[in-house]
Image 1 (spheres, rainbow, N blue to C red):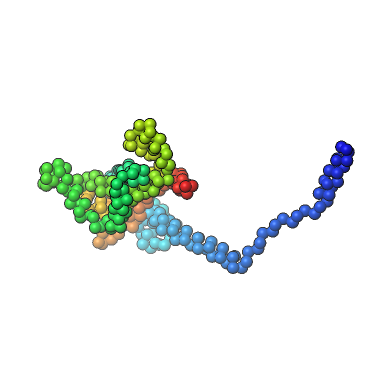
Image 2 (cartoon, rainbow, N blue to C red; image 1 turned 90 degrees about the vertical axis):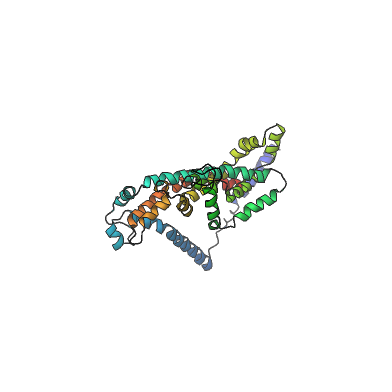
Length: 317
């Protein structure tokens, strides 16, 4: 019996070995239309990349050129006589280091306040149930549609009339209030509507069961927010922090209005000092622009992991 089974298996094995192999599926050849479409797509991507990167390359190149070469060979991307004179001139002619510190304080302060107050507001609108919640959220959304230029004059008057600040009396008269201070820039955007909206959308992706379990254990609402939900939202907070820091760093018009002392000027306002009615110092202007771009670039490099985590987290829901 055993010999018969072994013989049958040997015959099956021999037949399987002698059977012709199934042909492997061949990849379809691309049609002419597909080839043209792929080529056009690559050409478009390359052109868009060049258009995007070219201004940055030209800025760096111009910052390394002497004044004579900037005017004679403005389109040359490789400097014939590279020099760092423009960078030295940036810090020599104006207190650019002070401007840099001011922008750093305002950028970090604006990011910190937006992260904290935006997270508080977003958590309240996403996880708490109270009467009028939809109306409050609608007001925040509608405020996004109001141009910032409209609120500048009212904001300026309010900041100037803060009682007991900047020499003001109890009625907010007699002094400058918060004008010409860091708070004049930080406070108006401390709890931006976008920050609240952004964090509300992020907190809605987190499970409600975590908060309910903590409430059963007797935790206060702020403790639930600070201990449970706030750490879980670090990816969204990182994205909001980057956006807020970039907006604060690049802000020009509002600091120009409320900061009237040279010691309080920001980088963006300081760059305007290289442009006047008679000439434009392109070399120092481009060198200052390169320096002003570094902090935002570094923030993106160090926080890109959290950006990817935030996109992956929201996309997995």
